[in-house]
Structure formats: structure tokens, C-alpha cells
Image (tube, one colour):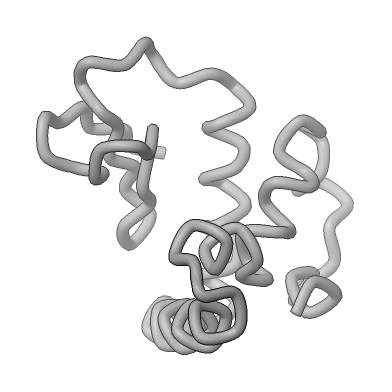
Length: 108
């Protein structure tokens, strides 16, 4: 996985963002931990399952729906099914070895 440290991406308040399988991390932050890298690897698998564009369409649509429900952008982000799967499993560095395809569906 390619990691690029940047002053601009992701937005302040976030450590990393995975865009098309390339991870951008805040330059002023410490090097990414194995946990964060694993979190982003989980997102890469989700992207592959939905042929990348499907992932982003679903992600944005779910975020908008959750924003309406929670009336809070950050709460909406944390409750997106893709994020819930990644946050629930990012400490388990073996998760992707046994994860079934479309594993995110359990979190929607």
C-alpha cells in the first residue's frame, strides 16, 4: 500500500484517507500505526469488492443519510457501515486473512 504524507489531505481532524488504494496521511502527525494501516487496508478490500466507484457512491450516499439521521457530520461518518467494519476490526491484524467477501454488509 502506498502512503503519501501531505499538508492538505486528509482534512484536519483526520489522520488518513484512502483514495483509490493510496493512503494520504497528515504530514504533521506521527507515522501511521499498524492499526491505522490495517484500517485503510480494510477500506481497500471494500473498494475492490464494489469496483471502487461503487464504494464511493455507497459511502457518500450512506454518509448523507446518516447525517440526516444523526444531524452531526462526525457521527454520520462513524456510523457508515464501511467505517464501522474498519473500526471494529482494525486492531486485528489478521482480520483480512479470514474476512469473507462483502463483510461490510453485516455493518450496514
